[in-house]
Structures are given as structure tokens and as C-alpha cells.
Figure 1 (cartoon, rainbow, N blue to C red):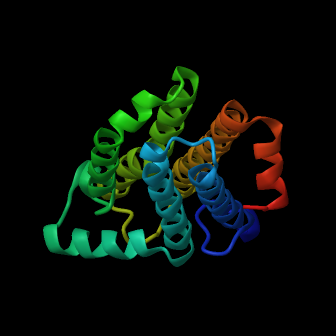
Figure 2: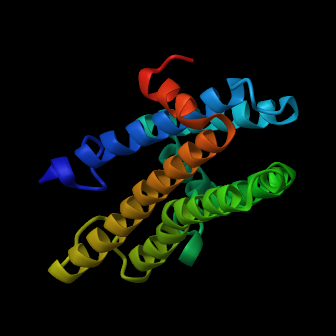
Length: 198
């Protein structure tokens, strides 16, 4: 059962999330190096590639959870801020969105919309559901992980929704990236990723 548990440290879902994030990083790098990619936006694609690579590392090492614990212990968050990383993670995502506005405006509308929607869904899962889960855990004093059957169901449901939002958003993001590759370079650009010839 642990193999399919969205909250387990070693599971199929974790492996899938790592694979998705690494693949997104790879495709962003291919786009950054594509000859038809305007030079002005190459650094932005390279930045996205590095960011998703770091996210895959973070997912494996659970660094955000360690940071969250430190923030929680230092600032004693309550309610939606019970889990320390939810609020800083959402603020970081908002800052990234503002920073990338010019870049997003340069993309075809369909591509920009796909990237924004997938990013929103990822943050909703990673920070939004985490915030609701934190408030639930604090409200019913579940910090010691002693759950009734109802509590177990509610916590499992929220962690499953969080995981599904993260995985689903990265599938949408990958589809959007492949659509963009077709837009700038046709089928050959997509084949380049599949063969890993970059």
C-alpha cells in the first residue's frame, strides 16, 4: 500500500513526480538551446530548466519539509500557516509569476495560458492544500499522528488531492512545452527531446 501512498517517502507516485519534474527541466533546456528560440528569452528558459531540476531534487530530498519545520518552530504558525512552507511557497510562486510576466507575454496566448494554468494548479496542490491540511491538523489536534478512521480518511484524501494536482499540473505543463516546441521547430524539435539529442 505504501508504494501508491501519495505521502510516503518512497512510492510510485514520488518516483513519477521526480520523473515529471526532471523531464520538464530537460524540455525547457532543449527549448533554451533551440536555434529558432529568440536569444532574448533563452535565459528565461534556462532559468526554468534549472528551477525544475532543483524542484526534482527538493522533491527527492524533502528539503521544503525541513525548511517548513524550521519556519513552524521559529514563528509558531497557526491555522492556514500551521505548516511553515505553505505561505513562503505561495509568496515565492507569486514573485516568480511577476518576474516572468514579460516572458509569458512574449509567448503565444495558448502556450502562456497553459503555463499559467499548470503553475497555478501546482501551487494550489503544493501550498493551498497543504495550508488547508495544516489548519485541519491543528484544529483537531492531530500533531501526534493519532488519527481516528475519519481523521485518517480526511488526511489521506487531502494528501491524495495534493499529489494529484501536482502530477496533473506537470502533465499539462509538459503538453504545453511540447506544443511550444512544435510551434517553434516542428516535429523535428519534439523528436530531438524523445531521442535526447540536445
